[in-house]
Every structure is written in C-alpha cells, then in structure tokens.
Amino acid sequence: MIIKYIAIGAVSLMLLGCGGGGSSSSTTPETPENSVIINEVLASNKTIIADPQYDKYSDWIELYNTSDSDVNLGGYGLSDSAKGASWFFPQGTTIQAKNYLLVWADDKNSTTSLHTDFKLSKSGDKVVLYAVDGTLLERLDFKEQYSDVSYARDDNAKYVKTLVPTPKRRNEIFEALESEKPTASLKNGVYATEQEVILSATPGAKIYYELDGDDVTTLSDVYTTPLKIHTYTELRAASLELEQGKMLSSELSKTYVIAKNIRINEILADNNSSNVDEDGDYGDWIELYNDSASYVRLDGYGLSDSKKGFTWKFPANTAMQARSYLLVWADDKNNSTHTDFKLSAKDDKVVLFDELGVVIDLVEFKDQHQDYSYAKDANKTFQETSFVTPLAVNVIAKVDKADFSPDGGV
Image 1 (cartoon, rainbow, N blue to C red):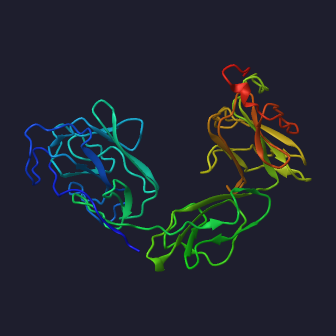
Image 2: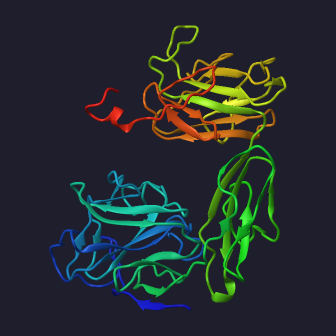
Image 3: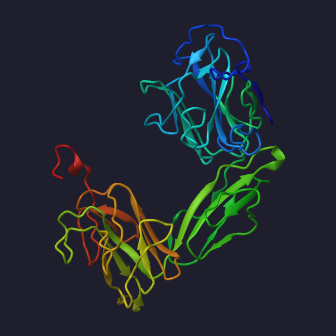
C-alpha cells in the first residue's frame, strides 16, 4: 500500500544578491539555530533535477527555514562526517522565511556557489549541518538509497523514503516500502570444499544476486536453484515483492572462501618481545600451515592486507613440507621473507592468494593486544591468545580482560 503524507513548508529560496522569488519578512536575518532543518536528501539523482551551473544530475541536500524570519547561513558548514564541517556556505547566503535552499553534494568544492567538497554514498551516508563555531545543529543518517528515491522529512519529523522527490518545494511523501531482505543458508566463512547456498525470501518475491560483490539491481541474475560456491565469492542478494508494490530490498552480503591446503594459522600484529627476525627486529608476522600430507610449492602465491589483490609474492621455489609451518614477516621490508605491508593491531586483515590471484584464505581481526597473537584453535576458530607459538602448534590461552584494566599488568 502506498501511504501519502503532506509535509511542511511553502516554496521559494534566495541566495542573497541572486534573486529567487518570495519576499523578506525581516531586514535583519536570524541565525540558523533551531530554525533551519535538513529537509530532504537525494544521494542518487539520475533524472529528478539537473544542476543548472554544470548541467549534471548531481546529488543534493535540501534545507528548510522553519522560522518567520530570513536566516543568514554565511560561515555555517555541511559535511558527511560527524567530525566537523568540511564545506562552508559562502558569505551572503540567505534562506528566506519558510523557504528552501538546495545544495549540490557533488565534490566541486565551490566557495562562491552551493557546491560542497563531498559527495553522498547511495549505499548509506550522513548529512550534518554545523554552526560557525562548530556546534552540530542537524544530522541525518540514511541507509541505502535507490536512484531517484529521496529521504524526506514528514509531518512527524520522521525521515522516510519517498518515490516523489520534491527539490525546492514542499515534501509530498509517497512512502517507498522495501521488500524483505533475503536470507542465506550458509554463513560467512572459510571452507575446505565446495559449498552450496540456498537463498530464501518472502513467498512470491523474486531474488536477484551477484557473485562478485557488485551492487544488486533488477538486471542482476535471478535466483532459481541453489548456488555452488567453489572459489572465493562475495555474494550479494536482494529480493523484490513487485506485486505488493514494494521496492528492491536492502542487500544481503556474504563472503565465502574455499581454502586450499595452505592456511593462515597465527597472526601477531603487535610484536614487542615475542621473537625477532634476522635483523634483530621485533616485526609483526603471519604464520602459515600446510594442512596436508603432501609437499606444496608456493610459487606465484601472495599475501596482502587487502582483498583487492596482492603486490607481495612468495619467492620462486618457496615450498612447504607436509604438516609444516612457514613464518612471513609483515614489516614492509619487502624481500624474500618480509612482505611489502605492515599490519595494524587496531583493525586489519590478512589475505592469502593462490597463483591465479584467487583468495584461498582470509582472516580479519579487530584490536590485538601487544604480544598477544590471533591463532586458530582446534575448532578452526581464531582467538586472541597470550601464548604465542611461532612455527609450532597453537596453544590457546584465553585472554583475561582484567589483564588490560588500568590496574592490570599489561
């Protein structure tokens, strides 16, 4: 069912010195505090309104002056970050009483016209309005947007997706109802053999999917039978309940790795006293394990801290004996046993690629404590451990959080 709301306001805007219709009800403009709101945002503008200055369909932010007096916005700022304004309204920018002002979020970074130094992400973003002194006045957080479907404020000061964007005029909310997001039978993870994934959705809904991490659209493949996962796969899926007049759902996101015999076994991302390299340095390291009864050559294999690909490869003739370990230093020295990247103890990942550039193992971690490693246990689950075991069987000594309290010993 389509629900219609009627939102606030009357139509007009003025940029001081440029004309724009309407009349001023005050000769001394007020400040924006408690009077200017973020009224509507479109983060994927394809056909709604073109920017007259550049003749492009750019994303936009609409402000509304709720007061009975004109408001001077000069020196006030906008951002897509809660850390402070990055773009500021030119001096002389005025929004008339009960009127609208449209700002183009197009990364043009103009100091004389209304073009910000940032763009908006259709996958989810925020818009924040700041006062001259840096005070946060208004903030709108939004999730995934669809092309030409805006987020607009209704009578109850609630932001909803509307099928009818209304730049520079009062909001008319024709609420865009989303279909229910599909589910997958297989959770994220690293698997030793080919897997099967069953997608499910509301009865009657059509499921669209991508296997390479691309955004899902109605031009994506249609799900009909279980999916066979035999290599590294970034599954994205969304459902559409078209007969109910709903829109494509938000995306289901799953990542699957089909590992070979070589596995990431232990990671130390903050080495201060555990073990040293041939130069006597306490470098961070990555331990691999050959989980097979056969000799394995690593020619062409690579490591990275990014899923986008690798720049560091194992030297020619590098091999691992059956059931053996190999230690690689992640210290940016970039030679035969040292990678061209370092690890961050705060939030990072280690990715192992085969000779074809296919991801065969992937481990992501958050905070690591100094000299505590991230190691695989008997259940093939990674845990932080105080017992660091380079080139040896992992021993999981569970971390006691009290050790890291202000009065603790670490």
